[in-house]
Length: 353
Figure (cartoon, one colour):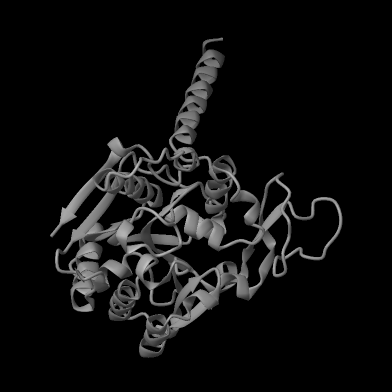
């Protein structure tokens, strides 16, 4: 009897140990046969500041590349920008630089910042033809400065909507969309049609790594046209159904971003905070803008977006503009899905001059 009791106790202890081990890992399947570890309890953000990076609302290219270098080395702990990049990517990767370009060169992601990121990637040994600057529509990238940098560095320009959508990878939501020409299921009939948003083939079949480069630009429903909003809705079709309310965005954006084929490819997020536009969304309003002279770096997209919303509110207060009540459920839900940290008290900020 004592022997049987001892065996039962041993089995119980083994079962208890297994349960504790399972509880210590994230219960989201990584897609490669493994479970991903939990996100860190704190997010790390590096803010690089240069008071001379912007002159008369024009970014100064010679000041911006050194800012990118300082951000990379301070975030990764490496000695050079090349070493920093090689800790995030390999020279065999196809790296997509996701920009937010529909707002134009002044309010959207600034071409000078994109050029600086490209230059540092090239210094790591990544060939120019393995770099894709992309947004939802390629037509938004037809700015002279963007076309020029593509020719100068030999990089590709692409639009996710122009590459078609992957039949096998989609996001399902009960909200029924009104399909438009170009959406994957446009013209189809039947049950379930218009309830899925398909991921672009540009993301699923062309790129192996993604770097978010987003502006510090307000969005009336999402709070900021930031890392989560820009990448999630810029990568799928049938997305207009979510943009009618904050509640719909709060569910859809984190869940789309959490798709392994999308969020798992992101290695770095950079906020172009050279200029902060706190009113106007995709229209350029210099009188609703403040020059900050900052670039912000983090592996955590949620933390950066939360800090951006705080900054937008701070600039509104300084301008004595009525405050905006931002529904933070997008970012709270993103934390619940373990995409990143939404609690400002758990965001560690390093400011680098």
